[in-house]
Amino acid sequence: MNQTFRIGIAVFVGVALGAAAVHGLRAQAEKKPAYAVAEVQVTDPAAFQAYAAKVPATLTPYHGRYIVRGKPEAKEGDAPKGTYVILAFDSMADAEKWYSTPPYRDLIPERQKAATSNVFIVEGLPQ
Image 1 (cartoon, rainbow, N blue to C red):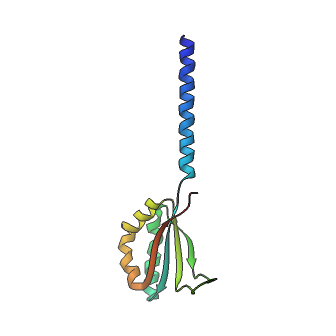
Image 2: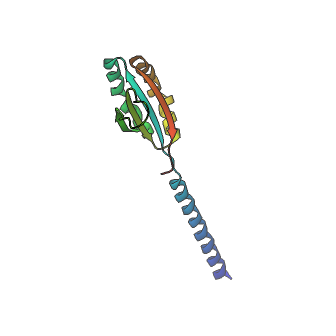
Image 3: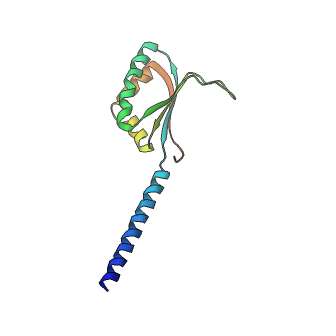
């Protein structure tokens, strides 16, 4: 009976570990990145350059990184105005925290004085 009890416990532990592993893999598979997308028309190049030099340091704590920074080439519809910037984040929570907390939040007025912008945060598809 003691041997049967031990085998039963081992089977139970094995099933529990397997279920935990499957749950972890599903969570990783459903991980959704987020993107900050900005269309920027610079009105004061010197001030914008000063602002832009400060932005990369604000991204690090939130796992943010540049993936696009340049003028888009129109293929259909109206030609875009200005430059596009797309930042990638590991999650919507990271993107929201980056945008709404210091130090980036404190830089927003600098950008607004140096450029006209449309800024969006959008959740990506699971990776």
